[in-house]
Length: 105
Image (tube, rainbow, N blue to C red; front, side):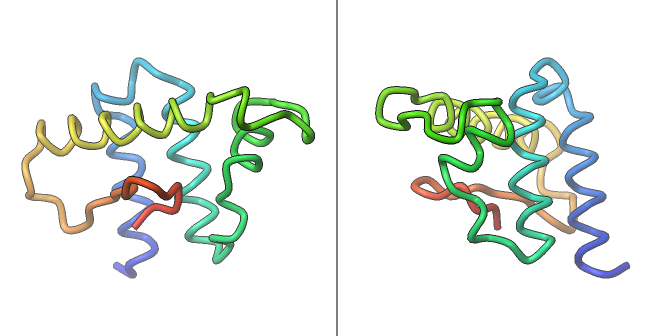
């Protein structure tokens, strides 16, 4: 299996986990950033773009007044940690979103 396919498989496994099942917004956030990264567009993974594309904010919304992306990014990081805690380290690919960035690794 190619690494891209492994990442897609891991994304689907994560989204099906109990950590993500209850939050459509966290799932949409994670899918958006992973898909953009896999498509070779890490430059599109910016706070404003995520706000517009994932959360339906207007293109000119004030990111300093509307913290939805920052708040949800922290939640996604916690959900990722929870999902990996549930399954341990047995998966060949781990998706992480480092603090201070929305670009997954």
